[in-house]
Image 1 (cartoon, rainbow, N blue to C red):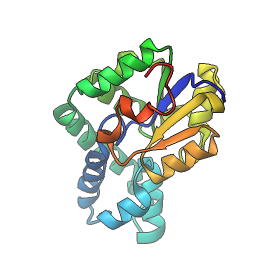
Image 2 (cartoon, helix red, strand yellow):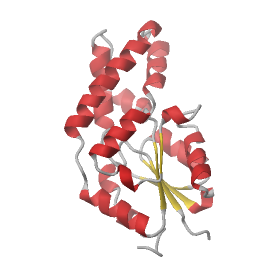
Image 3 (spheres, rainbow, N blue to C red):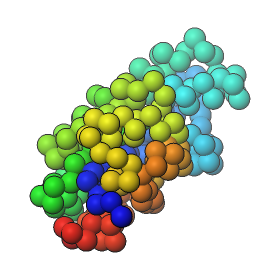
Image 4 (cartoon, helix red, strand yellow):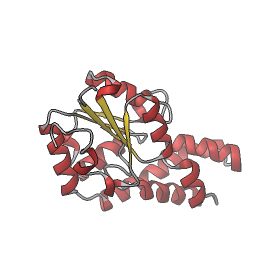
Length: 207
């Protein structure tokens, strides 16, 4: 059995419980034009997808005007940024976990379907950014989750194999991407589940 050398984290709902912020921000933008995504729709399909994919789905299924996509993306980012700055808080538990993993020689990366600015702002406000060896956003890949490209790219950049890697994910599309990468996948319900105890059966050499 290969020894684990790297842990790759999704961001929203894993390191920071921000899934609700993205949902609310997009609906706030869509409401200007009388559209919305229901809670059921979000939980069954939209959760974890980049905004551009959500808007394409809305256009196909609900006739949302394609010419408004760019405006909605801009409004959504504005509303998201406001929430990130006002609601993101440092987590001592996450800092302790990342410090312990780092001290144990584990390489750390964030692989998110969010844009890079969102990733960096969220990690900086949570005081977690300096722990990571690599940050990847949806701007770093051609194919977003559920395609495994972002996770395969992270492994390549970190110089590790899938059998040497753990991925922590929560959303269905992210879980699909993680499993397709060939790595060990730890599925969590939300950020509250993510602490050092999560790794006790996989990282006994540093636990």
